Image 1 (cartoon, helix red, strand yellow):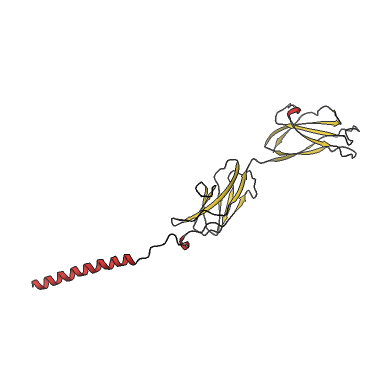
Image 2 (cartoon, helix red, strand yellow):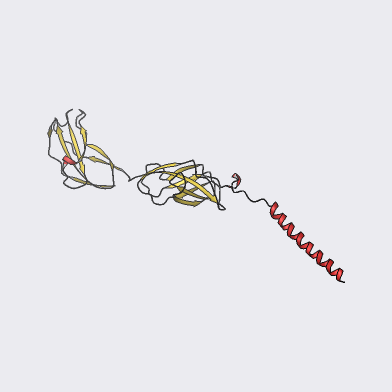
Length: 226
């Protein structure tokens, strides 16, 4: 009876060792996922394009940028540096492209870069980059006035000077101005376009001239832009 018990105990111990060994062998033979394998790394966006606004420079503080060349399920980020450390936008792709609205930008010039993450794996920072200049929107205003019928004003040495400023009753010596010379037609031009204006109120007055002779100013008019 004692021999039988010892034999059973020996068999049990052998089974335990065999079981442990088998488990250990299984762990040694398992192949861990290689996070550096290109097949396991998310795709970096291959191109970027402005969606809103469509062109640069633009006056949109939070531009929308389309990143293409990604795959569905990836989390795609935008950055303003080539090392992809300063994130300014994020979205999850549901197709081969994704639109990202940036956080509010300060006035200036930017180069955007992108990378992607999925399943805790991150792609390299993109080589593709997108340039955007954020600035105040500029406006143009066409100004018209009644013609001065004096012959000299409408001669080759005559014309008008259009003065404009941002304060009422401004001093024309310090003001911006546009020269509108006569073209020797029947009358000198009676309109011009003031460009590159910011939003706000402007004041305009016009003076006719011939050589060094100048007329009185017109009544000052105000223009609200836009």
